[in-house]
Amino acid sequence: MTPEIFARLAPLPAKVKAVVVTDDYMVFTIFVSEYLCEESRRKALMHELRHIYEDHFTNEVIPLAQLEQLADQIEKRPPRLLPLDGLTESTI
Ligand SMILES: [Zn+2]
Image 1 (cartoon, rainbow, N blue to C red):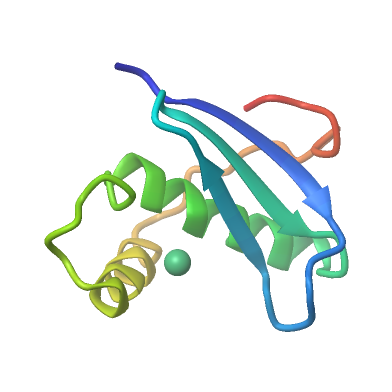
Image 2 (spheres, protein in one colour):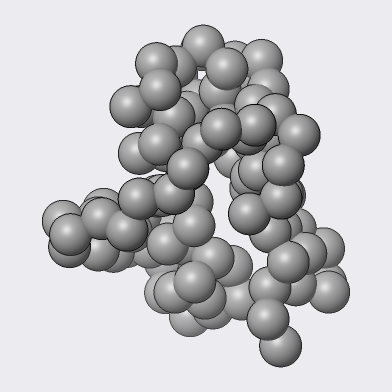
């Protein structure tokens, strides 16, 4: 099943770069902090996308701290850049 992913900018609490909300039907909404600069928004978005594509949300075996490390390790691969234009209202 292909995940359906939405991304939005939101006024998140300080120090929270992004959060992902999901349901049981592979629908994910990534909220990226609107207070970040564009580069940080892009990094935060990529980090959360990797959690989704690496199946971290449905894998209950790996501890959360390790999942965070994995998402950051994967981040060291060459990035596949996504256009952030219209992030407030667009679907990826
Ligand atoms: Zn993470």
